[in-house]
Image (cartoon, rainbow, N blue to C red):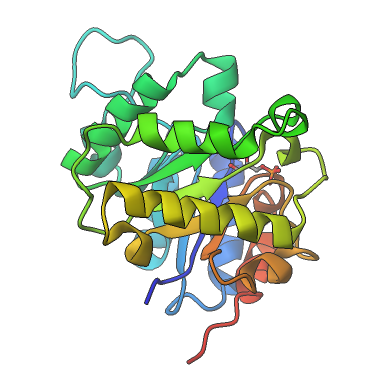
Length: 251
Ligand code: 13P
């Protein structure tokens, strides 16, 4: 079965001392960690501190990376660099990258390719804008993001994830209805089956967009939602630990 996956995306937040304080607090509070993969994606500058404080107790992820291994790419970070900081995960194609940094589906595709080659666990983000939703294009957009984001890739053959993050729900306090997110998650799972028959069974599909302590359980209860990608609510160690504690596993 798919192991639940709950990811903190800190975005551009926390200095080194704030990172250290969070890590110490979180280690005391974390729950469910054997049955759930818990991941923190700090800014790159926080990775070494999180690794030093948490050791192997928390999984680390990058919020982004470049597709080349090294070279004259000022400001960029490679998969090898993330691996050398102890990262196992990397977020690819977050809507903020797409919107603010012009990341197209073909750029996302190059990043997915290198992540899989390097055996990082990519978390491919997809989701529609409000305008696309209002124009009834949500499913077309998500389908296109999957098709172009995964074009030409070998099925990972190892753990990976797709995060459905409707852009209108990110940082707005307006989460999707859990039932609607489930319908989209089931759609994503079915679409993955058109790339490769085995993908639907092992791809973890996450919901992201204004997840809080109050609504997390309703998302986790959905059949096709295997966890969450959490921004604002992950910035407080106690809140993030409480959200992870909402995931009910059978054992
Ligand atoms: P919020 O949880 O702040 O809405 O952010 C969601 C997100 O973008 C996670 O990647």
